[in-house]
Image (tube, rainbow, N blue to C red; front, side, top):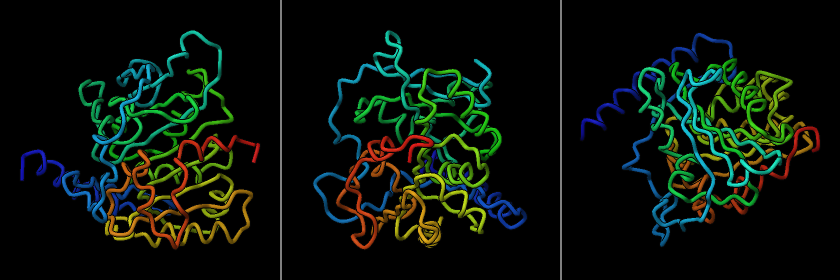
Length: 305
């Protein structure tokens, strides 16, 4: 085991302990049980020609957009962040959809005191795909990836960041989409659960968990929701998303909540979801992974579904 592995293992147990203590002491519906999966052991299902989540096998795109680091304190944002704007953003007047990505526990850092720590945000998800030239959604969008420097995603600070992003950048405020992994998945659900007037048009939490109640379900049912989870996740039980989706759909929402499960996968199933390489590896008994998540989100605009 390397020094880096030991660092993440130690960080994992510390954050997991904090999360479990908070979960036991708080009445809030979603809490940060914040593991960082081991990237060297992704529990890849089956024997495939294209390994799910392996970005080295994805085609390189000719995307000419720009992803810019904005360390904490650069502007009025409550977090440091990376911001991606499509190639035409600088010359046109179009208002673009906005995708906000919330990372997991292992990618936090304070870019005000240590600017290099902002690079941790590029480890997974859309910011990684952009950095590695694998970004090619069906509809151009602004992508903003904040960095948590507080140990967990504070719901009020995330809410303030969404408002900041929606007013600072030229975006279509009816098309604000939220996604996150693990701790970031929890925080994604937390925004839907905590505020009746949230700005979110659709959400994709990955590996998320929480504590349900009636208000949680009623609020969450108002936003189109697609959850992804590993069937053998021993950190965030897959029973939670199963129960949540069942409870939401029992309310007959205007958009049915979806759940896609990966057989043989543990907590580390984010990359196969963001890249789409998980298509065809999902459990056929639940919702199929037949459309990339960006195209799915784009179907929905706030107040128009």
